[in-house]
Length: 310
Image (cartoon, rainbow, N blue to C red; front, side):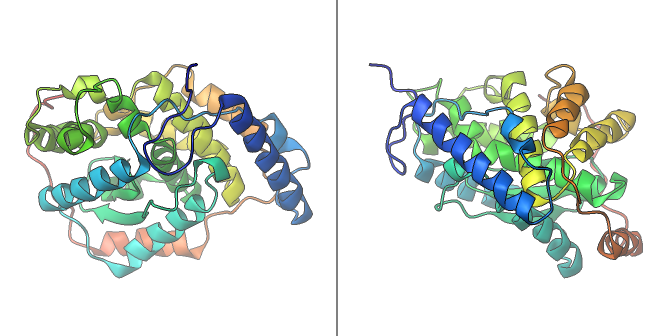
């Protein structure tokens, strides 16, 4: 018998059909609850695309271990911006989105955290188990809070779907601890990702562990659904990809690290239409204060201009 979902620890194995039924039930409950609160049009959530986590031979605890070790490496390599006002703003968005992760993709073992990297590159990434990093450049170019939420929702969807260790599942002869450097290098991407990956003792290339177009589309769709549940207009995710494309070639690593599955803006927009939020959260004074505060800070660190090793 083929096992569609496998974990060494955590949730017990469960057939795909049963998980889809539970997911559909959760969506229906969410639709009724949100309708009663006046946040979303009745029945609109039922049409959402079903996003199913891929096969994963690693345990949830493996994700946590890899992410914890990776976060240490990242914070050794990256200039973390220690600014309580900005960090609190980003964390508030992140926590709202974490609360919108579907029930069947929630893992109590995960520890979500949110930090800002003080570089001008337009990028963001999240590590297995929950640590997330948003580049200052992303906050600079965002037109609305919803655009920031769109990028963060995409990254958090990768974590909830456990894409990092799912991608490594193909390398079944390796232990999660051994493969950590390569997983993290692939997720972080760019020059820093290459540096972290070189610290791994394995010869597994970053290209092997990069998220492909299938995982990117899953993260787009699930991220849009999480945005709607959190009260954001999911079309803002499509908007932020337009913003990133407009800035392409101007310190943008996001596009190289997150390949376009094709028609990205179109299918995100279509998904958003099935998740119509009646009274979406809008950018308020907090967003304006955040960007005004950014402008008072010294310029972010400029990385050396060199070709990415990816």
